[in-house]
Length: 177
Image 1 (tube, rainbow, N blue to C red):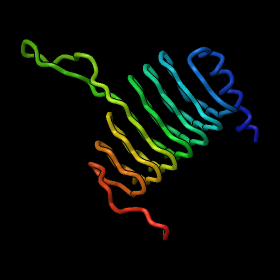
Image 2: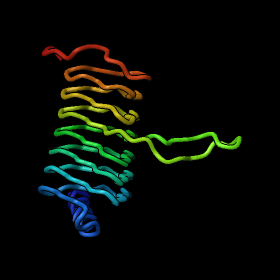
Image 3: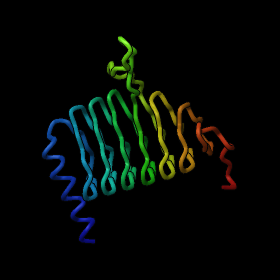
Image 4: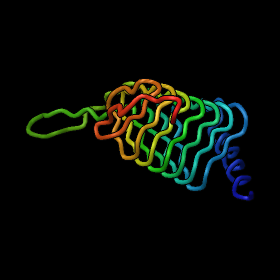
């Protein structure tokens, strides 16, 4: 119980620290060791929970819906826009990126030349398994399970179970699940 109270107090302090860059409804919880770097804008629905040791870097926009749980050691980096729906469960070690590094070959050297961005959208009632990587430009529909260790490089339709590297639909959801 004491840890839960500390997590809410940690959220309130973090919100004061980033005043003007956060729009939030209700109370939220932030676990110990989590790092939030906000140069962009963060919008939170109601009662979202962040586990321990997360790295959240928002240079663009991050929108998280109601009752979403983000477990420990999750990395979300938004250069443009990442949207996460309502009642989403994100397991430990998940990484979500809305960008890639742009490289160019110049005078026999490979050099960094900025970023290529494309929004990421995760629907509602989605369960993202342990150590999943979600890359730029991906849309995951509603009512989806993404299996552990998957690398999501393309859209996943609603009402499906998907897994693999690259992540592919395994089967449609049905009422017998």
